[in-house]
Figure 1 (cartoon, rainbow, N blue to C red):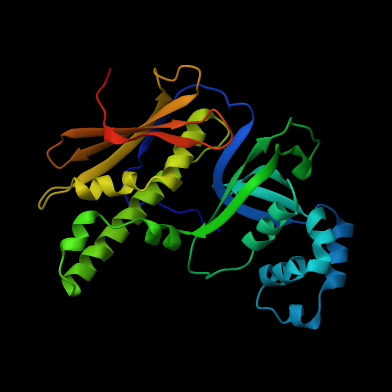
Figure 2 (figure 1 turned 120 degrees about the vertical axis):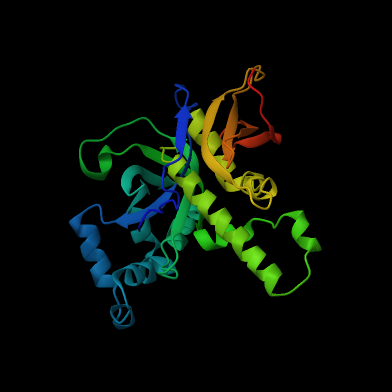
Length: 288
């Protein structure tokens, strides 16, 4: 799969603190790849191909057809499920149960080839053990996995409230289309910023916000006036001084308008446990 590219001429800048991964938790964005770990597994797969499978338009479709049949779940368990980040093999995945295994199988179902696909894994990284091949990758026990396309994600972002006041017609349609294009551009920038392995506190906070907090996409639109424009400059992730006994990260977004005036907004995320959650809604940020 081709990694998304940003529409901006200059790449956005991301800065991270030097915290280590938190208790082995992983929250990562990438793409799923399934491979044969050994020749005997590949030969078994070939024996399971039916004439209908052989007429499938692609090898990816044939592989999905075979692995998705309930009687072939034994083979799905033997496959090497690789998680790639920016086209680099990063983790070897181990589903926690048959539910997660089915999610892995569903995720490799070929979709519209014109759409860019993404996968998200949430789980626990196991101690590194291995000696070559897929075994050299860190193992992640997957507790949740979900799959989506860029278009589906963009369409899921709610329209700004001001849009409800616009009269229906071509003008409103164009405004909505412009908003969707803007969301896509920021989403692609955020994916580049989220070029990480998802196992550090700052990475997990950024990845969570990128996928679960639509306000970070609408703030650019809401703050833009006719004749003006906000350019997304980057994001910083740092520990919150108000964390107490919790591991709370501040995610700070920076924008600059055409006059060169910089605006900063932040939200905070609790990454203490396996599942991050929002602590503070998006609001203006002032340097302490």
